[in-house]
Amino acid sequence: MKDQITALSALQGIDLVLRELERNLENYPKEISRLKEELKNEKESIEKLKEELNQIKKHKNELESKLSHNQSSIKKAEKKLFEIKTYKEYEALQKEIAEIKKSNAELEEEILKEMENIESLEALIKEKEQGFSHKEKEYEKKINEYTKKIEELKVTYEAKKQERNKVASLINPSVLSVYERIRKRNGLAVVPARNEVCMGCNMNIPPQLFNEVLTLTKVIQCPNCHRILYVEEEIIHREAQTA
Ligand SMILES: [Zn+2]
Image (cartoon, rainbow, N blue to C red; front, side, top):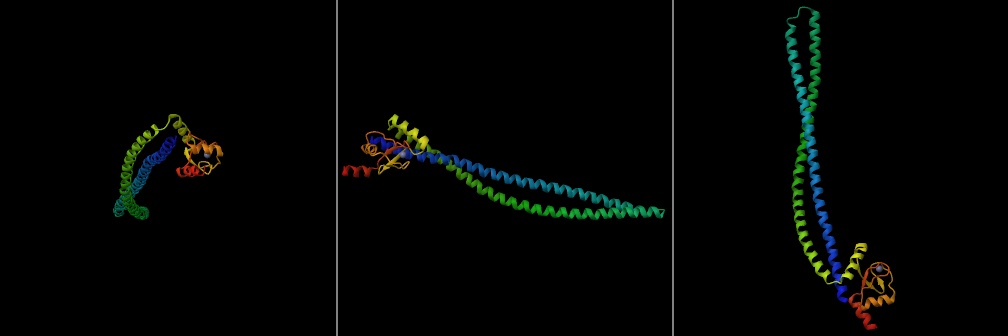
């Protein structure tokens, strides 16, 4: 029975390592996805800014072609001024020219504003792109590291799994099934009993039962948490001496 308890204890140690490995095997891929997602979002936000820039440029072009159209209208009207016969016609044409000039002044102002918008947006895009390429390099490095780590973890995990099978094969199947059942429910399945107290749940163990734990003749479970109890080597020694 002593060998059984020792094997159970070893098995529990392996299971704890396996659980930690499993956690890492879940976390690293999650972290990789998170990094990829962040890069994707950032790239999309830069694309949106570029789209906005194109719209502004398009609008500026429209304003410019309107302006040049107006300018040729003014030239035509000014030529016409020489062919005018009546003052009334002259006055009407002058008024028309003045109106076009006024609207051109507005167009020029608007074009200037759009040029400023283009300039600041281009600067922002450049800054964001530089930041992005820096981040992309950094994240790619991390992703490569994590991918390598996952491969290493898989190898370690497989080796541990083999080790587990070997240790589990040393344990009596009925004892093993008790262990598995408690482990699923309580996490730790094998705990020490010290001074007649279960270290799993901190409850007192009846003296008679504690004595049975000491004799190591069969698997003893804590009456409260049902974990498998064992007594550490030096304590058995001490109890044996005082007995
Ligand atoms: Zn207990």
